[in-house]
Image 1 (cartoon, one colour):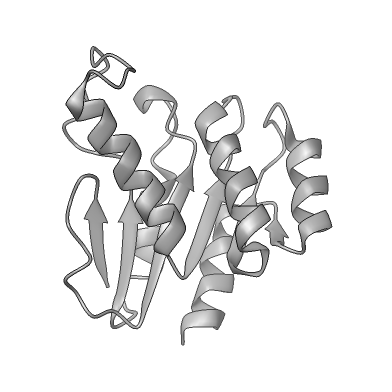
Image 2 (cartoon, one colour):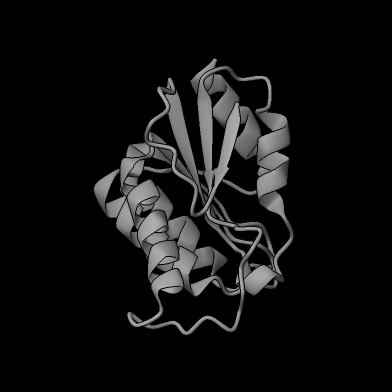
Length: 156
């Protein structure tokens, strides 16, 4: 397994599968749930995890088309969201994750069967996320360990 964090280039690899990790980051305040997924899938060959949580994120970046670093981040995420074989959408309890909600809507509309959605108790819009996910036929679970198990079953 290889984990590529934004804005790393991943398209020159030849993976058997790519998984985009969409979900709560909340400007770094959300727990690092991506590490749980990465650890749980570390033994899967030819898998690339696309992780938007970047090590050099700077909250002073202007969320504007004029800030090239911000544009690079958003475009990296959109490219990964569009091209990944599977997409995990995780919504951390206590967070709001507005961009992740946007990504969930896009992905469910385009590729519902390749989406795995997790909104544990405590996420402020859990009901909306669960109903929408089930409506579009996405896989819906309530804990991060179930996400790992489902991905393993699909990838092994």
